[in-house]
Length: 308
Image (cartoon, rainbow, N blue to C red; front, side):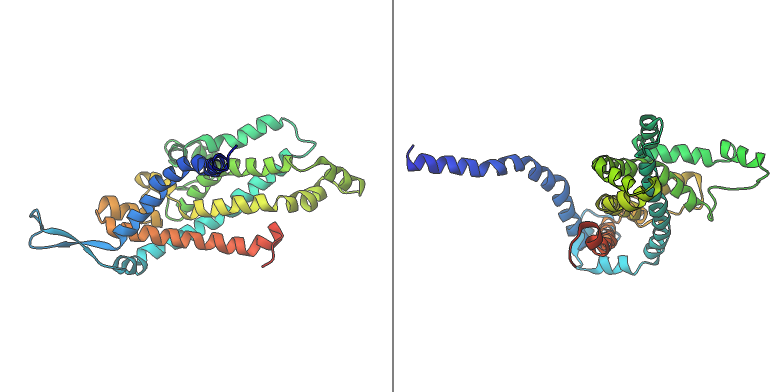
C-alpha cells in the first residue's frame, strides 16, 4: 500500500465519526439552534406604526435593542407568575420525588409482592398526555360530576371547591404528581436494580435490616440518579404551562398570566406582540437555568465525588 493510499484511508477513517454526527447536527440546527436564534432576533425588534396603521407601509419593524427585555423584567404580572410557580414547584418537587423514591425502594424490597403489576400501575399515568390528564382531573374536580365531592359529602364535608383561588394550585400539584411520579420512580428503580446484590448481603451479615439497608446503602448509591431526576423535574415544574392552561376554561381562579409561559402565550397569540413574547421567553429560559445550576453546584461533591 502506497503512502498516498494510507493517507486517504486515514482521512476517510477520521471523517467517519463526523458523518454519523451529521444527522444529529442538522436536526439540532433546524429545530433548536435556528428557532432560538430567530427568537433572539425578534426580541431585539419592535413594530413602529405610522399614520393610522392601516396602510401597506404603515407597519415598520425597527431595532429597539434591549427595550423588550427591560419591559419584560419590569412587568409585575411576570414576577407574580413566578411567585405562583415557585410555590407550585416547591410542593411538586418535594412530594413527587419523595413518592418516587419511596415507591422505588418498596418495589426493590425482597418482600414485595406483585412487583410487575405495581410498576405498571405506578408508571401508567405518565403515559397519559398532560392535556388529557389535566382534563380528566378537571372534570373530577367539578362538583356536579366528581365522585370526590360525593365521597367528601359522605364524610360530612360540604362546600369544598377544588377550583377556587385558594385550592386551584393544590389541584394542579395533584395532577403533576399523578403524572410525573411514575417516570421518576422508574429511573430510580432501574438504578436500584443495577446495584450488586452483594452489597445487601454484606449489610445483612452486619445485622442491618431492610430499613437500614434502604437508608444507608441504597439511598447513597442512588444520589446521581436523584440529582438527575431533580434537575429534570426543576426544569419541568418551573416551566409549567399545560395544567393551568387546560384548567383555565373551567376555573375563574386561573388568570391568563398565571405562569410566566402563559404570559408568553398571551402576548404572542392573544395580543399579537411576538417581540415582547420572544424577549420574555428568553428571560424565562435564563431564569430556568439558574436553579438547576445552583442545585448541581450544591450536590456535585456529595453525589459525584467532585471537588468544588
